[in-house]
Length: 381
Ligand code: EPU
Image 1 (cartoon, rainbow, N blue to C red):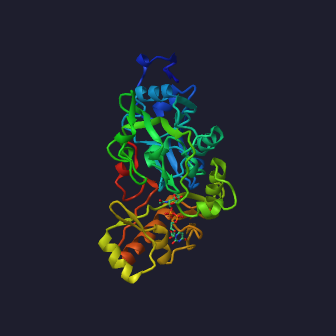
Image 2 (cartoon, protein in one colour):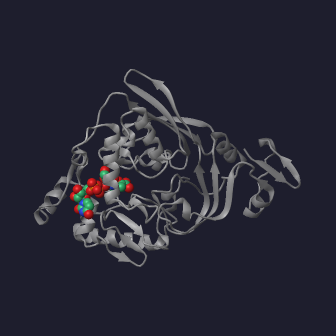
């Protein structure tokens, strides 16, 4: 809820909304009583890359009602809007002339219980791994392989986060959103969201039209584990298989490979693993017989980490940007890097992989204010 002060009078209702059209006017005439709103604000501490960039406005809301009032006030009109969760999958390449919206909507609530499953409704502003930890204590199966992934619940359907053979789409039943134009609540069922590898309709048809406010996850009450991916099974050797031991194993594997963003700025995998055609794979196999690969529906997936390593980038640094030694899919800020430095390094890596293998590795992170990017590609609206 917010109040507006206009020319000396304190107003509270929507009908009395005054729509200034410059930043200065907004600053002078509006007081957001409960909502945190910052102007010309450094986003550094809100992204795991830890990169300094200014945003025109940063707004934190902690309920659907606040978000709706913000939309109805007209504050977002004609402004670029970016929804930011934990900032763990984003690179601000430069300052951002727009409004960054951050959800603090909390709550984890069991809304349905059947013989073998539960449906849990979770606020977009919950920290994802806090939710996973809670599912373990409750004895709910399904989210344990997704332990220790940084970020917020609201980002999970947008990005369809995934790890160790499980993706968010396997758990998501429906997603509640607020329409950025009408401020109405709209609910999407899983099958309406065109989930793919680190992809969903929120990055395409629905882009910019909706802000995620609550996510409904279906979790199993019956023990069932996915242990076939990577080294989970080896990591479990000697201990019984339980929700807690699987979670601990996943956390150990991640910690051994992925740099801790609270120590070293990074956004997890910077690139997606590319999928190439079967024909192209056969051709490459002649030159690289030991090339790792996974058969997928529409071709063959090649680990981008391997491609990057083959091109000699593993552990290399360039100014204040570097390629992680233990997992070359991850780019790191070695201290004080600007977004464009990370971006330049990523482009050089991409170009060298293209030249050597004829494969394009596209970024997994969302690029904001990138110089040659189509701005509509990186913004929610
Ligand atoms: N590899 C190398 N060199 C290395 C590291 C890996 O060649 O230095 C090759 C190996 O062949 C290895 C393969 O890459 O078997 C796969 O490595 P890993 O199991 O670490 O998985 P990934 O494909 O590199 C993906 C996700 C990660 C997720 C892991 C585990 C993407 C873009 N990344 O990485 O997600 O944790 O699988 O499921 O799909 C993230 O999204 O931020 C993220 C960390």
